Length: 404
Image (cartoon, rainbow, N blue to C red):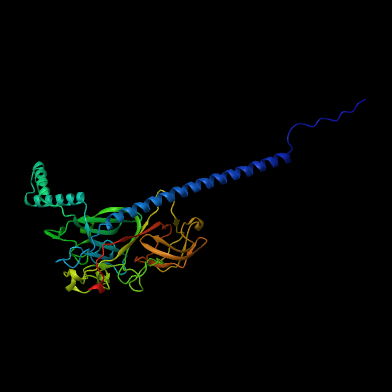
């Protein structure tokens, strides 16, 4: 009689199933991590490209305007100062009575070479104003005919004036700025009140009754938007090096560039109220004396563009801070794109430098950098880093002070 061993039932044991499930789970985790890394890298690349595009557009726009500065190519054989350059630090928005310690921006007014299309548009606009002042009821067809005739009689000189001014951008985010520009014919006046007009390039300090901030805003257009900062540094005869931005401030002396300028040296820039002290100023007697005009050798421009709002914020504050606090707590500091040491951030209208990031904290805060006012900031405030672009533009330069 034979004995047969019972056959083993087909299938997996519990241990084998656990091992297989563990292996599959590991593969799934690896797959999810790879997908997450890929998506994150794609998002970072897309954000980087968006910031690079914004920075490049900002450089092109500012360069296009400043490369037209006339400077002072001859200097000694002129009878009038018709190529003036004035850069002042004035309260943002040009209020008539700025508050103490108000945030300041640089306002640039300069003589420029002007393109034919732009000059034609300005000539036509000026002719239209004159015609409508004399006969406000001119029929449209007759007005156009007279304008065409007036423009043909007016020779194009290729000369004009430029006004550049940073302004707070409309919207909920108080950190954002726009760069506004206005172009004018030499001697052109703008309305500043009932039956009152003024040449904006003959007013020493914009923002007062002679040239209200509202008039400046009305006669300028935004050429750049979604900015965090705009800054000009001017290479003077005493400058030996461009300053390093370790907090957003520069000073005259020590071989550093200047942040204000008056090429006519005519007594306009003598204190903070007038827009800063220009060390080469010679007083009111020099305003109409072209023999002592001085222009900078070059201008370095620093622009910080904001991250597009479609992307996640660079940082968000956990709790509020007052105007003296030196520590700021972030949500998930590991994702904060700023440097771990010696970084700059902007909260609403205030620039702040920090010494280091430790975990979720930014420590060693230095408040009110880049001529901004220290402020209180609420919890949940967006922390801006942006992207900085710097470039240097040479200026047509005739002579320095010590050349006579």
